Length: 383
Image (cartoon, rainbow, N blue to C red):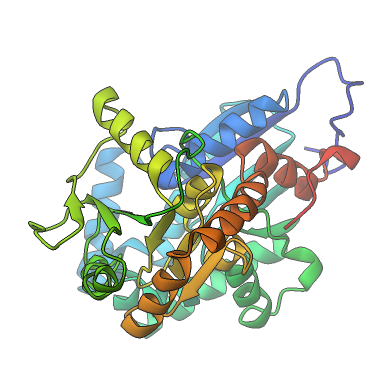
């Protein structure tokens, strides 16, 4: 395949064809927290034909390979990321990519395997391997030997990629500082919202905070409720709505809604109502590699109190919300007091709505096409 880019400029008789490749079906609903299907939707909005490449080996081959790897490493985590598993996934990806015929480019989600020589591709990451090992409960269990070998393989993949696209400035910094990649090769393209909440309506006072998070402890739900208990003493009309796998909640002003599912119309309507009436979204997680929920809140015109660990700063600028260190109850309470001021919340909500326009899948896809050299001047500007 030629690496000369067939620019998307309207002169082609056939649409561009771009592959999205990952371990697991990248086009399946919910893949990569919706990133795979989202990128596909965005590319199609640009008139691009999209094909998915799943590098997962067929069942018997996968089980046999993992069994051999486990016998050697004695670690189920290490067994998934050995050189042999990498080579197997790379062969499967090459076979399935060839089955789609010629493609003009590919987006490799993460870097768990390689693509065939001659493939024009970019990588897309929401965190680097070093960041994953430092913050993720699974990757933190990688042995030093397997981690070092996997990192070396990733460096080789990054060297072959046209660009190493990062979801956030946080990840881009790691790719530059930890992996020695040049700044020009690490564009920040962002992720985008998977749901479109309606614009908020109603008054900004009394304040109504909204927490949404399936992982109650990791998203720091207990700290949010604890800080709110003190806040409501000073702002008696304040409310806190909690969505997710939370325990029973009986604190004054707190309403627990349980794990509302967006694929159920009645529950999705309830979530939409909560965003429409919220004056501040609050989710100070232990870490958020990107934080798609902040972009969704911003689209509704709701400012956020977000975690300072991870990539949230790409979405939640100082004009659009407040970043707090996870577990810092005093900082969280101060932020809630600040966003409890209706004038502050309204101004930040307007800024959050404007910022959210950057985080649509069509815009992200435009940046990826630009990174692939397929969009000419039509590609959206990097973040």
